[in-house]
Length: 268
Image (cartoon, rainbow, N blue to C red; front, top):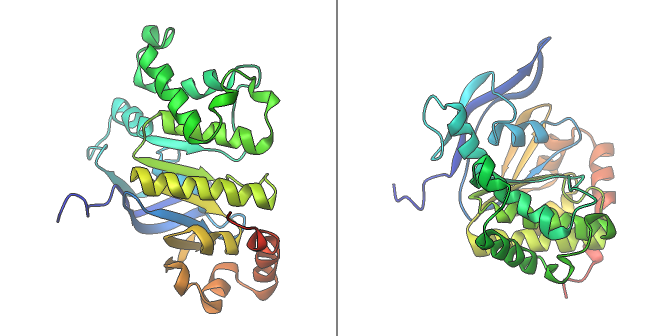
């Protein structure tokens, strides 16, 4: 197989069962490739966040394994740290340091690349990289503002810039637009989608909204009760597939209703 065709990361019968026998993720086999924008679709509690956390090794699997070019068969703590350094994370609640500047927040994405002492005084090259990442998300002009002086949408873009500063091969976003209004949600996913395509980053985003998934995804993975019930292109996401994901018409109609304002937003 050509190295370009090899998956960046694979779940090989990976499953998660919490203490007490609660199954969060059934044994699942999925592969993710560079440059593909994958959306995890499903209701709350479907297993989307658990799946994302397994990919970053924040959630240990109880069955199966995670295969990645950054991980040996029996990874050490150093291997796990290296894998997480190659994995950018974007959170719903931004996770910024409110009283620090935008630039300082983005620079925290570089800390994993340095030892303790060097991290106390990051090199000028890191500062240039952080500014370039801010420029990429359209916020270089606010580099010296405090993070808590930005709007919610701007803070989320700072979170994207921080993740990009890691120079990751894999980018994970857990409900990144849940707290944004429809127009800003559309803009943010447009930005993520373009970054994925331009940089060849494997990007995996969890969403609730059907319309946004159809609009931006190269691939949709639908989950219900911790099981993958759909894996295909947005064009294959028909009513039968949606009912398999949401379980009943009421939940499906709610997901569609959340999209109604978004679908009318112009991309220009």
